Length: 433
Ligand code: ATP
Ligand code: MG
Image (cartoon, rainbow, N blue to C red; front, side):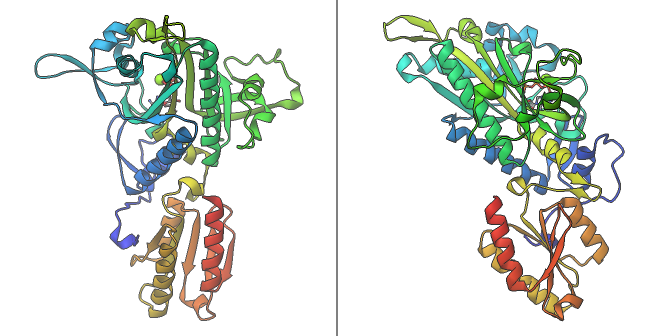
């Protein structure tokens, strides 16, 4: 993509309304624009990151055996009245009337709708286990929408729902999702910490929250340091669930069940939450299956959520410096910023265009900064946007057939000739996607 043809508005000043770093950077780098309180338009760079995150989540869900569907944002109140949550959800639910006065709502979550889909089609234990998911916008009229996309009113969530014949089988489904969640966050370059959580308004018996480590996170986590070093190929859910981990309001400073030298204290941000809630919704909405003896049994359910739009902010909280964002390669909007410092110089243009075309042919995503701006503005804009690698092409280095390749994270740079730079970057990027 040529920057001059792109739409990526950057701001030099910190926006007054933003309190936390990710919100400031998202506005300054032109990722989102607030449409109204807690509701955002996604601009091209922000949308690319959102889609990348959604895709990683999707791939890990599919690998774990979940099946994708799509449920609507607007739901009828009927099922919610049946489940009892139409009243319980209170003011967080956005209620709407259609033209004939029917009560509708903008879905804050989907347990009711999915249970209804299930009970319409599934009657036999032979169709279990079943795990269905979708990625859809939710609306919760939060008391205090803040921190940009981290606590919005409209936000994108991947939510899925598992159906099993018994509690034991439901725990197997739960553990599969637990494992998938850890893998998902590790793939994004994050460090997920799983904590036993309160089940809250969803209700039920078993629940884990997934927080990712970020110095600027809102919660303080106390946990066994083993949770920090996980091999994605060797996730053992039972074992991980047995490690100590607690948020500050639960952690008891004097009596925690591990040695002090095993205890780590870090800041975190909640990005996912999973629940096993047994037959709570199947009872209310009548979701039964026949077991192998022909007896009717209530189905055991779990629900699992990942805050896709919150993750965009959370990843920035985890990875940034004074200059701007530092995207991990798997979610980055582009892999390389190709910065042509002298767009009036024929040689700079020729080398830049060649490299750009060759990289694009190799499916590398390049944002080619061919804008007619000062060097300073181009360098600071690209640092702000935070694409993981930069190629900087200037007249002086080109006299010796050299260009600069810079790592946005370490800020280390090397001078290479264009062919070496091409090979180096192809290898680097392909090994990390
Ligand atoms: P919180 O305690 O932060 O309000 P929750 O327990 O209400 O979260 P869930 O209903 O479990 O959240 O939703 C699953 C995930 O959706 C959360 O882990 C979070 O990542 C995301 N999420 C929830 N509320 C919001 C919001 N207002 N804005 C953005 N993401 C959200
Ligand atoms: Mg909430």
